[in-house]
Length: 133
View 1 (cartoon, one colour):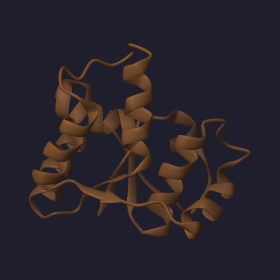
View 2 (tube, helix red, strand yellow):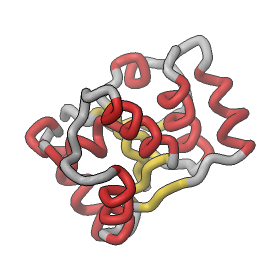
View 3 (cartoon, one colour):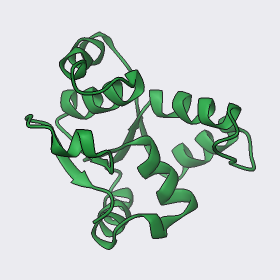
View 4 (cartoon, one colour):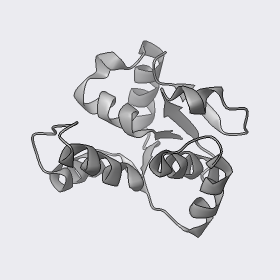
């Protein structure tokens, strides 16, 4: 099971060339097996980016989310354990959404697919895939 960081989800749906061949192949294989996930906070983060005009989805965020979930993407909800595990990432990352996303992968014993170099270079038990490879 993999948890996609926000940019990895966006790239996979809007611009797959941004992903590395290995990353794209893994997403395609696991999507078909029902093992590609995102944290619920991912949709909030994308909504924030859309409001700031940094992302244009061409459909509403709600419509886009529902289409992704109907196509097999798994949404993992936030809970108290994830909130507490996100505290492990306080010194690493200033962005709370990134901390929640990393904690979601950790709590669900999943790998995080990201291109965030801070997360990729961090010495921690979190399993990671570089979205650029």
